[in-house]
Amino acid sequence: MTLGIIGGTSLLFSKLPPLQERRVATPFGSVDILCGDIVMLMRHQNGIPPHRINYRAHLSALAIAGVDRIVAFGSSGSLKKAIPPGSLVIPDDYLSVADIPSIHDNAIVHVPPGISASLMDALGSVVPDARRGGIYVQTKGPRLETVAEVKTLARFADIVGMTLASEATVACELDLEFAAICTVDNYANGMGSTRVSYEHILTVSRQNSDRTGRIVSDIIRHLG
Image 1 (cartoon, rainbow, N blue to C red):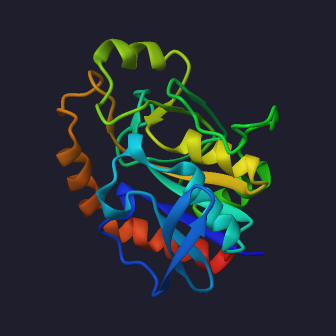
Image 2 (tube, rainbow, N blue to C red; image 1 turned 90 degrees about the vertical axis):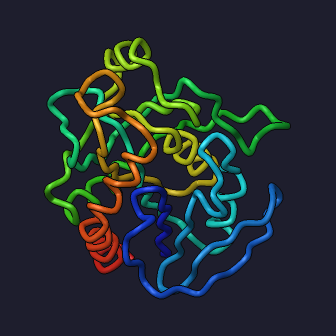
């Protein structure tokens, strides 16, 4: 069994394990991955924003590289006062208000999406201070959500981001187990006193880089 790790903004400044770069050709395009005892993919490679990520190519590249389990890191905003910035959340479900891609464009195939309960439990054991459970809602990006959107989304979800629902869905289509750990970098727009911006998210990522790097190391040691 080979573990795949998907990293995003929360891993930009963290110390990562030494891995060999490899370019993988897929039916949906070529992707750069990092290979060793585990396989890592950085979703924002070459500075690509969330709404332009080629999820089908990304997840296919991991499958071609032999990955059968994926832990994805996601930067998120909190939709609940009870989940303050600095929290870690392991979501157990998701919804999306953005289009989600599919590898089954030319066939009627209904694949039940979802997050692997067993992998989520294993991840919770590795990161015991993370909040287990919660609903992640994906918006399209690159813009942040309006105050009115945040109030609406908070009725149905706990945290908001721009990537994980697409990754989880395509992973299920490829028969890959999927779980995620989300860093809560801010309260969503209108919920806190701090102005939400990409620059603020980057600052928080730098501040938490040591913690995030330790989590990556722990995941590799226990799940890889």
